[in-house]
Length: 348
Image 1 (cartoon, helix red, strand yellow):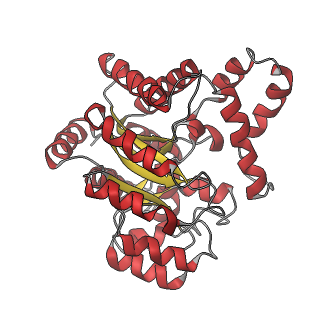
Image 2 (cartoon, one colour; image 1 turned 30 degrees about the vertical axis):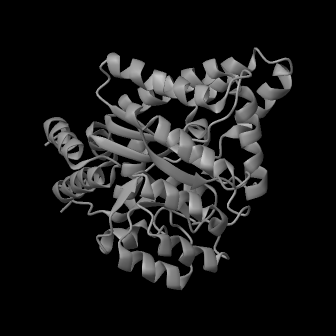
């Protein structure tokens, strides 16, 4: 009776070997804890910072409130406050994804003025890291999204669009909105996202993180962004409209469970999205903060929502991972190159 059922070790190995795409990864949140500790040693208040770094990882059973979790970013930003640190982290994030057979990565970050330099230097430090990784032949294509932090001044969104357009030829593929979802109003930022779209940039939005922001949910969907991040807590009207419009979702299951939006992966709406054949990509969000990996995201969703018979599960995983290529902010010819790479690397 049990012959053909997927056991845990076999499933994990398949998920690890599966070529994958990551479309929702924050640079700062993807930093290795070991790197944070290494960088912290050089700070004047290193002892205090080192004590706080272990608390930068959100684990199962974490009872901190969301405002308390936002304080984690203060520690990360302090430790990663040089251009050399940003270059190092960007390099390591690419390496970490390449090591688990990710063939395409879109990394996102809010540019900061560091070392007395302008924000352009921040973007260049990251793009330089990408180009150096490409020369190493890691087997991964990497692109950048410029983030608009909704907790910052609205005018910063114009700077994000400027940077995205300036560095479009070097691998910046769009802009996205993130940050503390209890601050700022999407409607205030809307003109800048409209400007970005008119200039040919793609736009992704963190969506439905605050269940009480019904009006904003609908405003975001009316804009028709190219992708939605999380989409975890939409009001009923927004949920129906989201499914109707079939706007692709960047699903971050482990993150959503660890911050107590859902009690388990089984309860996460990704199961409903899969049943509805809604376009989606499984993502880590912040692999350093949540201690997860892209392999783990596929494994978790497979255990919770996919067929448990081995052959059927493999097929479902393969289809899910390959379909994510359609959601990349790339032209049709590049997407076809990625499909060819996927097909060549995919385990049988």
